[in-house]
Image (cartoon, helix red, strand yellow):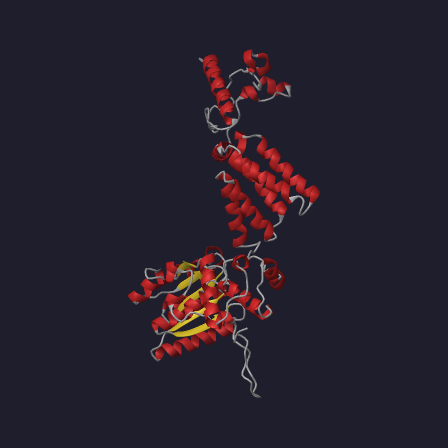
Length: 437
């Protein structure tokens, strides 16, 4: 089919062919795909190199977005010696050797660009060991991490480095990589247009992955065979989406789902819900989050929302997967299309602040029970008016501590059922003023 896996016909030992992703590794910053905000004509790294003031940086982004490649290209563009280590396989002894070699190199007039892959895997003490060699210029640190640096890296390390975010590759970026692979191998990928789209979707924004998947197809396809979507699925056995249920992927998708529901976009909400199901998220975690959304973002604008979210969670408990997932999807649609109000959420937070600031104040005596004669003599319960015995079943008494005065926490919106609640509150406010005037 192509020379992709061809080897010389000799009796000599032949080394394994280089992977396609390695053969297509860019040789210039201009060749990097999908990171124009860093490597484009007006990109952050392009400007840093042009100014001659390249500093310590941390690349934060998903796998397969070019972190290692860009680090190598930076060393070449600045004339620095490139050294690479991985936090997975390196310890304190390895770091000491690297730092000592960098010091010797610096004495000979050559600074070292040290690329540290998976830098978040180093513990706090190991991360601290970088500080002296960063400060005295022994090394220029380029770290790479797939995890949020704010949570995984020392504040001292972060204060000495600039965090640059690497973006997940879009479909057109992945397509560009496939075209480069076809040009390099001289072979068109033997798939239908629909299967080609499926292939880029399976890569999930990972440039290295899309080339690896393409390589698998080139290996498996028979001569003159064109694979459709089912054929691609059969050969690749589907690559799982990049999603760490304990880290950023988990929090990013639940955040996207929550904001889509809050923004009354049922289609986007369903998309992120499906992404989470597809990635193997715990459906009961999703159910709990839907219950939270019902209280936080809908509240009393639609009192049914909370009941429906709870019912969906119970339905999943009863049905399990995959049947129960439909109940969660139904609740997701209901919440996204319900009228929105965070008035209850805001009122609760305000009342919590007031309780913390005024927690020592006693309630007024007239609303305290008097279970003993002594308490009755002390005035407990004096003056209390039983609302059901009052006209309109409303006494208009003040229930706040006297020292605090009347507070107003809950402000219903003019949407959904809260419009009716607003009418009730206004009616009671008028009655209270009339009774107490």
